[in-house]
Structure formats: C-alpha cells, structure tokens
Amino acid sequence: MRVLGVDPGLTRCGIGVVEGVAGRPLTMLGVGVVRTPADAEIGMRLVAIEQGIEAWLDEHKPELVAVERVFAQHNVRTVMGTAQASAVAMLCASRRGIPVALHTPSEVKAAVTGSGRADKAQVGAMVTRLLRLAAPPKPADAADALALAICHIWRAPALNRLQQAHAAARPSRIPATAPVRKVPR
Amino acid sequence: MRVLGVDPGLTRCGIGVVEGVAGRPLTMLGVGVVRTPADAEIGMRLVAIEQGIEAWLDEHKPELVAVERVFAQHNVRTVMGTAQASAVAMLCASRRGIPVALHTPSEVKAAVTGSGRADKAQVGAMVTRLLRLAAPPKPADAADALALAICHIWRAPALNRLQQAHAAARPSRIPATAPVRKVPR
Image (cartoon, rainbow over all chains, first blue to last red; front, side, top):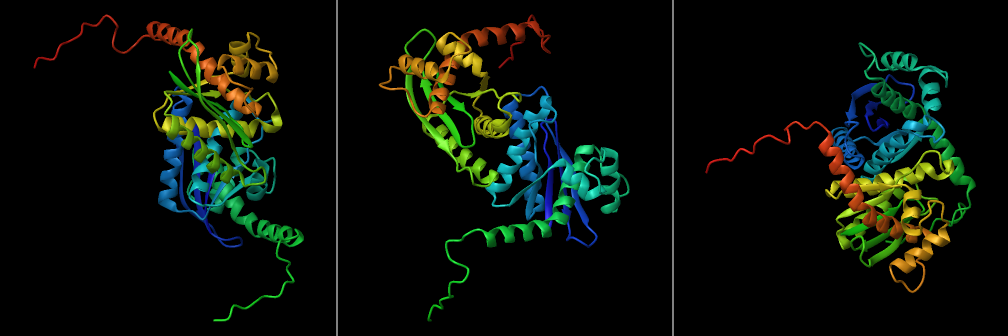
C-alpha cells in the first residue's frame, strides 16, 4: 500500500510517501516540507498548505493519508496552527475520497523505534535505516512524516482486524445470518 | 460593507450575514448553521463544512469573513474541532481572495453588549435588537455568528486606522516621500 504521511504544521508541514506492506522492506517514494512564511496572513498560509498538499496528492496518488493526531494539551502555543494545518490535510484527502488515518506521536515513535518516548534523533535514525536512506531526512518534520507513513503500514493489518471485529460485534441492519437471496437472471 | 460571520464548530458551525456601516442601522441578510454528524469521520465532517461555507459565500458574496479567534486554553475537549472548523472557514474565504478578520469572544461580547463577560442570552437579546428581528436566532451559534459580523462592522473603522498607523510607522521599501515618477506615453 502507498501511504502519504503528514506531520502538520503552519511553518513547516512535513510530507513523506512510503510504499510497502508489513513484514517486507519499505520504499520511500518522496519526502519534503510545505513551508509558509510566519508573517503571512493565516488564511493565506492555509491556502498555501492546501496547494502544497494537493500537489503531493496529484504526484503520488496515495491509497491512504496518515496524519498526526493533535492533542490540545501539548505545546499550547503552537497547537492551534498544528490543528489548522491538520484540518487542511484531512480536508484535501477526504475531498478526493482518500481514507484518512490518525496516529498519535507515541504510536508513531513506538512503531518505528520500539519506544513511545523516543527522541527526534532516534526516530530519524530508524526512518533512515528502515527506508535504507543515505542520511536522515531533514528537517525533522520530513522524517516524522515518513515515520507516520511507516507506522500506518505496520499498524494497518491490526487496525483492519479491530475494525472487522467491531463491525461483527455491532448489531447490523441486515442480520449476518440472513439467507443470501439470489437474483434470478 | 457586507460581512459573513462564522462561529466555528464541527457539530454546529454558525453562519450569519450582516450588511451595514458603523453608526447606521444594520441589516441581517441571512443566518443559519452548517451541521455535521458527530459520528461521521473527521475528514468527511470537514468536507461537509467546506461545502456548507462555500454555498453561503456563493449566495451572499461577502466583502469580508469574520471568524471567532480560537484559544487553546478554553474548552480543551472541543477546542481541536473548533480550530479545525475555523481553518476550513478561513481557507474558503482566502481561496476566493476575501479578507479574513479574527475577533475574540470577549471582543464580540463587548461590541454588542458593552461587556466582555456577557452570557449567551444577553448576546442573543442584543443581536435581536440591533438587527430588529422578531425573535433571537436559534441555536446560539447562529446568534454568535451574527454578533461576530456586527462586531466586525463596528470595529472596522478603528482597525483600519490602526493598520494605517502601523503601515506608516513601518519602514517601507519605497519611502513615502519618494517622488512619483511619471511614465511618459
């Protein structure tokens, strides 16, 4: 599967595209950052992020967009910009019918380093190793976006099983035991 | 001037359109709420809000969009959704080249009631009086959106003077005293 990871931010919005399946070597298809000037008007910054993300979606046509889940309690100063940039990323994906998955920073760190409290350097080192890159992607936002995509590819099988279990447990409108009626030709 | 006010929210996004100038009776051109189901996927909710706001912009063609400024410290539970809905509103306006103005809840309350700590009922009562409506607009989000638009119309002259003062004080690339060079025909 091809996943586009987004580490949302107004000043630097990290983007990373990874292709692969759990249990096999992964391939990096692209990595970069959408930047907007800190002194620009907020609406114009959101338009620039929208245009940047649209260009990445056009080029890589991902099957899924993985976005970092933003929490209100972290970094109160920057959290609003992060929430707004993440909204633009989710909007761009959903408008094209591309499913969106959210992962918390600790889920991402745990997926790529084994520890939910790993630091940026550790995440960068593991992303470099897992994608067989010559050097860690810079800036850290770009590496984080790749880590998000890797995290999703690895967690997807477990998440799918969970979703199926939830769906099976939920009372559906058509009972699962209802006989399949064949439509005569 | 015609102002579209947005009281951002994922479940209920209040919209109100007011026309007028400071010091003259104001006219309400429209009021309503864009709703999205709480159990829908977040990306799809943002797409629904975008479509709703686009329809309001198409219909009323405002000169300015006034959006409530969201603070991280208030209502931590709902602040992320509010920030995301406000991002969509600002994006829709800026994409069309419509200027965006942000006002805090206390600025809005102070503008329409005289007190920055007025309650919802007081804001609703003043909106009803100022726009000469038969009854307070429901739900409160719709009344708040109208209050935002009124606040902007009343604050705009002062804000413009401030902006002009800032621009005059800032060293510009072309000195204000530079002679105007006439291009010969």
